[in-house]
Length: 290
Ligand code: ZN
Image (cartoon, rainbow, N blue to C red):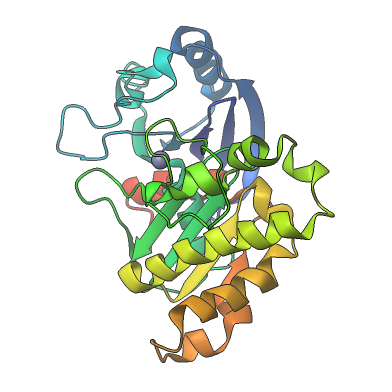
């Protein structure tokens, strides 16, 4: 059995599952402070025959396995968690932990069990409360210096869009312009209350496509998978495919880009991509990967 944690700002999803990504037992624990939350997580895993636990965590988080800070949360806006270490939290249990970002875990879940199956180069983008990008490159999750934070690339602001943006760090980053909170700041309403207003989704698709054009040029993914609450608005997909092609403007000539319906796709794991990816991280660290 393997354990998995999908650590989010409002809740922690915990699960026990098998080597094939099947979830056998799961629970949701509200995210409070570490001292409130961690005992409940430990209790969930207690008495189960868990070999290793994979954790998809909000960041920034240290992912350098050789560092003493592996699994430690950095300057997160979730202040009680700054300096918290996932590795230390489980040190008394004898269970090995494998940590990655929440979006990298979700990306891995989709690569192993969803829309990215069989592909060596995939990016997974979640567009919801925030925007995060998981990058699977040449058959491995990309970390680099820390991990990609590609939700914070700067985008040209559409003329006439005078919104102040939702990101406290950047005036016009992708997350600041196109996350759920950004939509709320711009229109004063939640996304689900704006479904009939075409101009809302035209602008949203435009910002998303500007970002995708840059990811295609930088990461050269063989498929782009879009998930998160905002992407439940299905009519965004055809608009994004068309606009992304428009921004590429014929510059790249690949078989993948000739079939945009198969290139920019929704996630397939029904919201379980993060937890399934975390299970795979656990299996991977024990050498269970084939
Ligand atoms: Zn930003």
